[in-house]
Image (cartoon, rainbow, N blue to C red; front, side, top):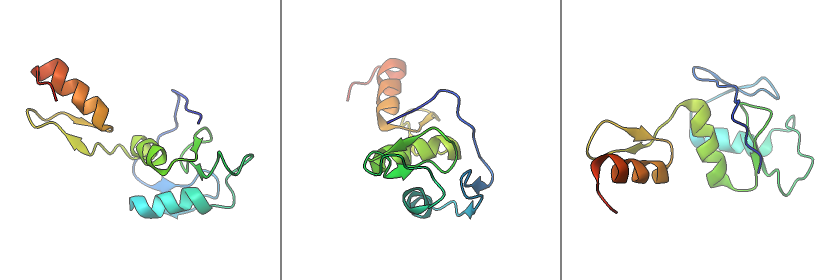
Length: 106
């Protein structure tokens, strides 16, 4: 699995950088496109089961990892803190926030 700090973000329109196709903002649709787009490079079909629609860097075999990565491009933060307005992309990040900022152990 490859990940780079420098990602090219696409916020308003989800445009596949490989086939230039506009995508729905529906996660299931985007995930399916990341799995099936024939324009995406897949040098290793096992390790590259999912290739990111928004950058030329990220690929993975794991759909959960791809969803987390897609949320970075979409700016989605599905995990909400119960104590303040903080939101996070990943549950582990929210858990660390709650422990560090609010002193609550889970």
